[in-house]
Length: 322
Image 1 (spheres, helix red, strand yellow):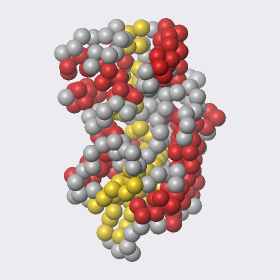
Image 2: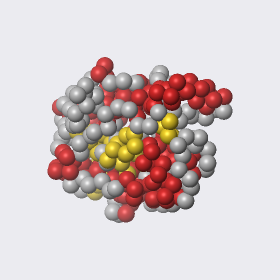
Image 3: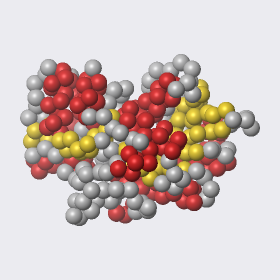
Image 4: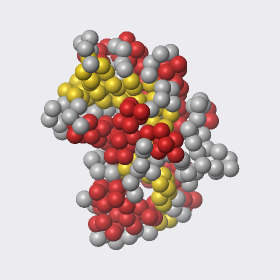
């Protein structure tokens, strides 16, 4: 059987990296993109315009011949660090995933990987290491983004129980080359490199290279188990360390970091200034809470079952700066 890889969110940081990885393997690839997506199309890739909110618009993307098998990677989604739900967040992340699952069943997709997020995993009061869970409770996580990823993850688990060979991967904070600021961590790095980052903050998060996440996704397609979830994390890095890595790679001066409590006091001003300039705020109460949350995620399951092995964060920062 001929194999076709379907990648939603084909112009996104992760989606485009998955496509490049597959292209190096010589695979046949289809990418689902929006008509207003910015980015350069890669040679040899079949691009389809479609919107996950519009089921009918995606049918050409799924259409195939009897001697062709479909392997689906669903990366499309909205990432938000806003305290309140933003327009279309639920429709894209939840209803869009529902549409994808429906079409995956209709067009007999062989295997599917859904890209969720570690935000969908509830924190534990004892701050113990967080691992994969069997049920994602939207009420147990904080923030509209996390709730939407939890609800969508449950849709995927339900579909897996109903004969669709579907799996979930849960990346932590994605960094690395190939993005121009749509990712919030990359946005901060770009601001630092262009001397527009006034300061950093205390706290940190688990960060992982986008290329390692792409590799983990493909390993899940090859070796993952139906109905299972796999955390694709890297290592815990403080914002202070991240800024130092960037300074070392670029030759720029290290920026000071203020305590989280002070940044929380100033966050309404950051958001107001960003709104005035029609820019996305870098620091919000939600993002600041994330930076002081439990960042201990175990990717042992992915390492054992998939052979997943993320690189050192310093390498990711050096490549991203370059």
